[in-house]
Image (cartoon, rainbow, N blue to C red; front, side):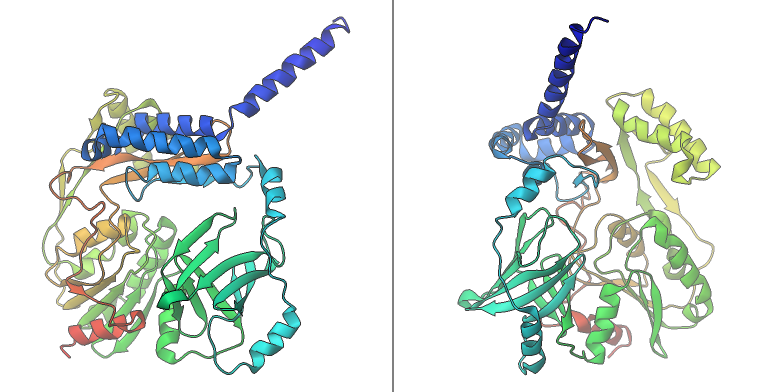
Length: 482
């Protein structure tokens, strides 16, 4: 090779790299998300039918204007997620990949000029220890941050004391709480410094502060909660299921998540307490603020509450090359930990799907599955399931099955409503900076019995006059006829 050719080849490589970098801007990411979602999401056509083409085109124009103004990946991804919310409120996702370094330097540099509040922390700690009337002021932890909250005029300002994230530095303002005009509002700045505003500002006892979906735990001053509140905070913080006896007639089971990794813990808890469950008149199942998960995780609960055959309406999968790849992965990749029987089913399902490109395919023999069990247990006689707006997806699938039992009543507030379009799949963006999450299937309940955007209503609505920490007590009272 002649030496004179080297600069030319180097120039070509530099141009190629520059062109690649250009494809990683927000506009190209938006075009990829839009095209991928339109071609593969099982709920896209349905949403378009409900909202109309003109509304969709207007939404695209507004989004494109925001996209063109975005200067970094942290600026871009919230816009992409907002675009997805046109279609539904759940079973959609834009997730930044942990190893994504795109625009990181520029983003961190821009945060160097972030608003700060400089506080002498040792002096502030002494002030807190002497303070007799307690409010939002204190030192709090919300992993990976340690935050001080100090009253400044009529507002409360949260400042970073210590940070485990490289996007946040000491003294930078992490949150604000406004108490103007008799209304309390919060602004919580996320890892990428995007602002999340909320009207939901709530103290849970003396040591937990809820700002929308963000939770902070007080570490100073050290205050002691009453037992009733301590019990409530235990159930809120629970990661694993547990059982408690409320009285001789009532058992309480807390199930924080139906994720597949919790199935073993749920099944073990039920097996270990089977005799007790079958000898106790009342059972409370508390699934508030669940995470969704796997239908298999609630399978062993159903025999305890069963009274009559349970009908479950199935789903159809949209067949596309990208969508079908997941089924092929299930059939061939041992990393998913599936049984040989399930892998065989996935292989057969893949065969059915590829025969019908662009169509919705029923992978089961029947539209409706009817589950009949041999035994109807006398006890538990009454079952109360506690629910709230934090329950969706698999939680709602469980409720559709459970509420068919004559023993069961639902207590709480309407669920989130995200079940009709389901079975999420995650695919990496072309530049590997983030993952798009969309859905592969739609329920055969559509359009006659839809859950999305509506939720499942309780039989007993627990209004705001009943504090959340008293819900268990209320349900126990109803089940025990008090």
